[in-house]
Length: 322
Image 1 (tube, rainbow, N blue to C red):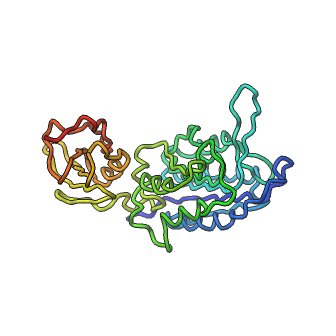
Image 2: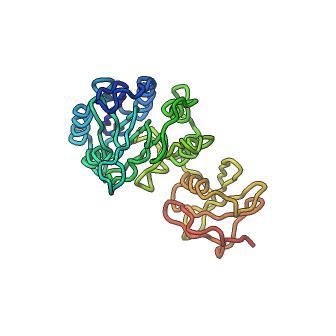
Image 3: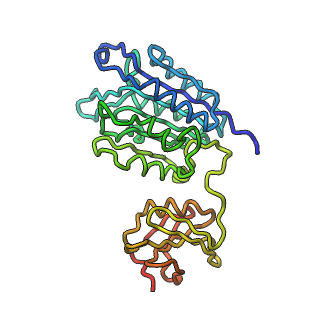
């Protein structure tokens, strides 16, 4: 197997703010611990070139310069991981326009529009992972970046981080992806990770995984680029169980793979679309989803739901087994 393309990680911890607007804000004391955890995740992803910008080094000049160099140096198929932990500010500069959101660095604010512009210079074939452990974290999803972007946001675009969270965002990420320093076998996709992060989270501070590429949802979080992104190919008759669903795989002539789902103790109308998508993504080939009621069985062709090559159901409400 060829080696992974070289990756880069820039880990920013803005725990010392000197600008007049932010100097009296309380320090974010979890910065160093968060960056250590993200550094371990980056190493698991095969990224050995890591640079931490903490305290006074987390300045506008240092951060923008690092991202410019990353855009110039990153391999076309490489992986750039950018992590920020600290305060964010939302300030209205135009009375008639929306408020501008930016990351609070040592000597001032770095607007998200400028962060997105710097990321836009990364080769479009590269992978960019941004871990934003800050207020308004998901707001970066509102900007266009040509490269594949995966955003791991500690909260929504209009939400703020609680002052004393029970578990820090970086700690929770590490627990879900790399518990005890070993990859979690259940963490098979970013879709799974998104559901786990949002589970039991307060509505006022709900983490979010976002990506600008449909194919990125099925990637295994923080796995090296050349590692298998999905479980080993399953053969006809193989079964997978996830939560209250059982899935079986059959071969349909001229179609390819077909994923059939049965719900234990509930109607097929109650199937969660995201759960079906996640399970369908675990099969290679052209996966088609067929809801069932009761035990696993094969539905007639007239009941097949439309799907894309990614196994996403176009419609399942009108599919009724005979």
